[in-house]
Image (cartoon, rainbow, N blue to C red; front, top):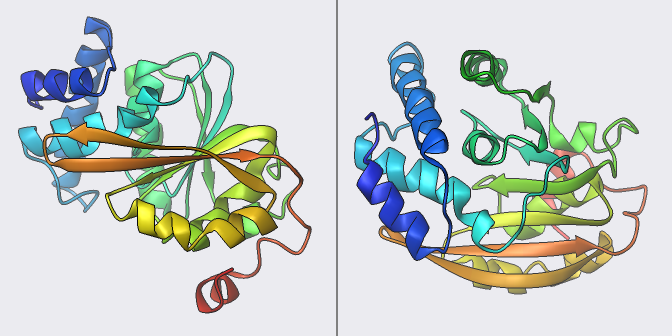
Length: 236
C-alpha cells in the first residue's frame, strides 16, 4: 500500500464514514500515481504514507460525515489542485457528476490522467472561479460546490456561492479556525444568497476539521463575483 490503510480506516471510522475494499484499493492506485508524478513536478508536499492516509484521503472524505453525496448530484470542486477533495470523493462516490476546477493546467492534466487510469468519469475546467462564476454555463448550475484550503471563508463564499443552484449547498472544509472564519463571513453568506445550514467538527488523528454547509436560498446578485483583486482587497 502507498498509504497507511489502517490509519485511514481508523480516521474515517472515527468520523462515522465507511468505504468498500474496492474504494480502498482504488485510493491506493491514486496514491501511487500521486507519488510518482510528484517526482516529476510539484503536486503536493505530502507524500508519506501516514500523511496521504490522513491529510489527503481521510480529510477529503470528511464531508461524507455530514452530507450525503447522492448519485447524479452535480458537484464542483473549486481549486482542486492535485485532485483534493474531489478525487477521493469521486472514488468513494463514483455516481456523482463531478467537475474539477483549477487555474493550473498541469495539475488538471494530472487529474485527467488519473481519471483515465482509474476508469472514472468526470469533467475538468481550467478557469479562475471569479471568471467562470459569471459564465451562464456554470453559474448556479451545481447541486454541491466544495472547496478545501483555498481562501478565508468570506472570500471563498464569493468564489463558490455563484456556482450553487438555488436549493443546493456549498461545503467549506476548514481547520479549527473555521469557527472564527464563519463569524467573519456571515454578512458575505447573506449578500450572496446563502444561509448557514450546519457547522460540524470531524475528529482526525492530526487535528480537528470544521465543515460548514451553506444552503443557497436565493440567487446571487449579478454583480458577484467581482474581479479577483476586488474580492481579496475588499472582502464582503
